[in-house]
Length: 470
Picture 1: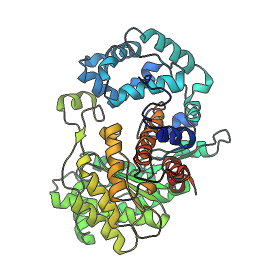
Picture 2: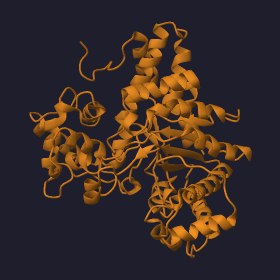
Picture 3: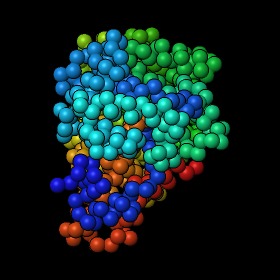
Picture 4: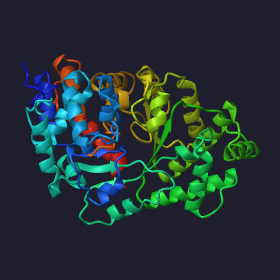
């Protein structure tokens, strides 16, 4: 019987063990998409306690705690302390077996805090609380130290076009910070014209650029200025978060002006209006990314804020978002083809929250490989509800069989937590398990130089070429 999360966790063959320990384990981390706070890195934030560090804002944990029957006051309530919330989390941890949170939480305890072999429960809550808090109080357990412990060499944060990027500038000028922290251009607020917050956002963007955005052309002018600003601050990627993929041929300027004015005034928009506007803005932005040599990431397929009562009480991103199953293939292919026709399709990473669309994503990516760079259009790693063992293995298997796994950019955390980086270890162990099994079964040569290089590329090399290097 294997020890819990032991040295050879997930490594079920001798080949897998060798691939992980000799090739994967020590690779640096390029975490090219996350939601970490650059201010915390710039100021090397110290974290108050393990309760707040683990549970503040973590909707993965909130969702699981509700499922386990924990009262909301011990999840998001203001009337309880983080010690009380931590105790509630520890008490229900035994109920999490089979959920990736069970593995992630213990890997974080073991890799950061040296609590190897301790199993979190009500019985061990005091020990875990005291040990973690003693270490979090030490300078080396600040935001930068936690990243350095996991050998993180590059981070891609997620930033609004209206952000001034002051903390990215501060990080870049700090000689004590060796890792690259690149902003990522996230323009959702500028093209989701149907959202009630759209007029207010346009006013905020106008304040940032210093002129009124009272026309569609002025909006594009403002976005171009912000693209230039991000580029000057080291940005090399953009990210579009789409609940569903909409696309229509880009209409003329008069029609776009009409739709923009409707949105700016908070008036009723038809689905055709929304589709035309989103398509036009995204085509414009994607062409600008291509001209700058940036990477475009597209996250699609979430159905959000499904529980009205909790949304009204707490707002978005509180653990009531699920998987959408609307059409993807046709609008996605049309969007990418529109860009490709003018040879202005940037390097692209596609993520679908709906795992039944994995094959659609992989085969769509295959349609737009042009020989200019390996894997120019990527099928991104298992995202959100799918970044667990089955979801990641399914995504990689389909990528291997319908595309090229060797060109894969590998894992990212997509996390707001500075303690989330053992998820890269989780992914790397799974990757080595899969390739080790292929070697053992004779599905590929028993050639460690061949397999080991492939592992190193997927764990680090491919992503480093795309996101780390200038």
